[in-house]
Image (tube, rainbow, N blue to C red):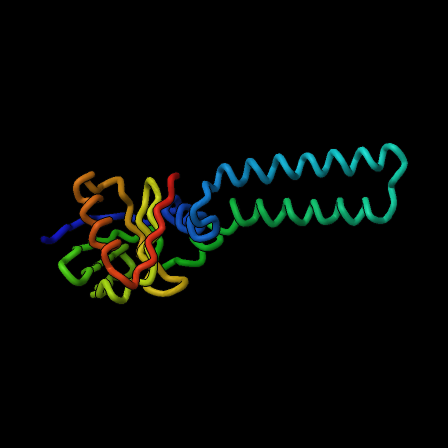
Length: 177
């Protein structure tokens, strides 16, 4: 049975890809909120120590570490997806058509600048991350095909999930967000 789907890869797809790759099974928004809560508690404790007179070099070092941690988290959550999107000029706004066959995936894509076709065996797929909005089908550790689930029927989503999760060599991660 063949399943044909079309998908677009815009900035929102790159954001979802980076966040799914970075946070794996954890909801990125909840992780950001949890980090912010812990960060503010540590900041309040450090300021409290400074105000009661314990403003030694440890407090200054802790403030510097808190600032670096905040910068890194904000960079990973907000900056990195945009930087990746801008660096992938040839892949921006790629319109892909994927055909899931019995033992391979036919992928063709175009965005006006380039046009490409690939045939990927299910055995070549190393990992699949599925979120509520996307399938990320990895063909190596850092490269993945992005499929937007918005244009796919629920029946086809179940069929795609069954095909990809039935392959022995594929690590399948189903995210709840």
